Image 1 (cartoon, rainbow, N blue to C red):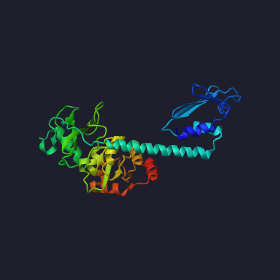
Image 2 (image 1 turned 60 degrees about the vertical axis):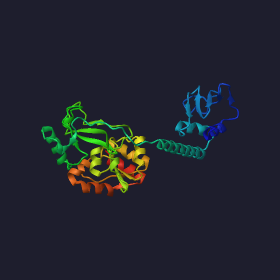
Image 3 (image 1 turned 45 degrees about the vertical axis):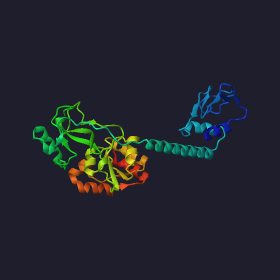
Image 4 (image 1 turned 90 degrees about the vertical axis):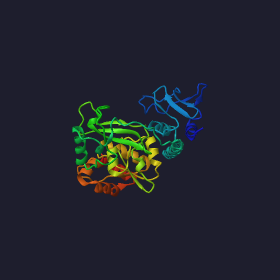
Length: 335
């Protein structure tokens, strides 16, 4: 039996009656507080205990609350406990104990999940004709892609950037291709539309191998102490970091990232959605960078304005690790 069940049972008055149905009933102390004109005198309040959880229900004022493992003491339950004679200090101690149990349970679940972690993904094919830029015969679409990338400070000889003249899937010839590679094999890719796509056409066409995939793992060598985590793979190319491919980092992706055993610096986009990455950083104990880039939303914008060296240096210099400061600054930065 849990500490919470024992705690609540010890608060129930001796004159409350237990029934074979599992209910322990007596006069509800919440009726006046809950809007009734008169207090309960007919024993309409009741607890129902079921192994390691319980519920409370008053059939007079209809006050309901309860508790089950994995939950804290909510306000309705706290009010009920106080009415039964509990003091604020004891409720707070119970709350802290429940939080401690939650932390232990969460830690054990995470450890068990990480024991089963397998970092590998199946090989897949790139769109037809995908090659490095310099191995193509230039045409109009190729030229537009080269112009788009070079104007933004990217090197089209970088093997992480490729081109396909294929119209399928998703009009790939209007995009440039970023292969997802791991251990020397292609495991997926994204096709980024050059410029602004027409209505109904996604900016990114993604073939991501699984929900725990993280782009750029192969480049995080043993002698590298710091890894920059970005939302999109283009920003990861700029920073030579890793990308979750989204601002919502799954627990499975976090396990992969943590397996690197390196200092992680999260670089959120300077918009409302970027706060999701800030929250993930706090959850997993990572640092967060808030570089002061005038008029820049992400590393891509900064690359165009400041160049690669300054962009990366400003990320490293602006990183902070204090969770409270991260949350406070994050709310101002990500809007």
